[in-house]
Length: 295
Image: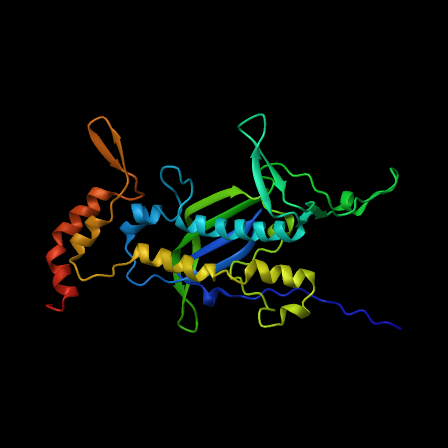
């Protein structure tokens, strides 16, 4: 008699591993990757700076910023690899030597092989009865633009508390920057097997012993980097100080976006910029002395 094992779902409390900042990459609100991290020397001005904005929002002809383009280029590359290995386009085998000759219409040229015919490997067509439902029809999906939505969200915690073990626990995360784009343009295999770390488990395995799916995944990830590491690094560099110049000079280098209306400029910021600048000016000398160890 077969005994059925009953499984009960358990929720693991990972709040002790939280940090002040995090990013979430999701597909149709299903979380694919989530990372918590800290930013040492974080400056509030950096949140609304052009440097931080450029990570998520592009300029000119570039619609997306550095971080988003990093993810999109990774998915595009994997889509090209998948298309290359799964295409049913006839593969040319002979007839590579020849010349391109102009036709009657000078805008087009025809390739004329030398001494040998052009041969192809042609994939046989699937012949099925009209009443029989084929596997291709079963797996075929009809999706419209934005039926599949990729979203990247950079978030910051608004509250912190100390637990019984004396550790700081962060909560109430609020999005700082969020970007969405259409994921229906990627092949289904790529959409359903997103791996931002590109840590394919069979990289150390002999490729000659892999099955088709393993070898395809290997080709899609073998030359890719660990995206979460580089994303966190980009965000930290945009939000911290790294040189020895006075704080006032460094903050001036962080240009805030302004909206001009009439004769006045309005900072694109979520806090009172004039109040902050006034207080900073009042304590500027004392702050610089503190960081240089004079007080």
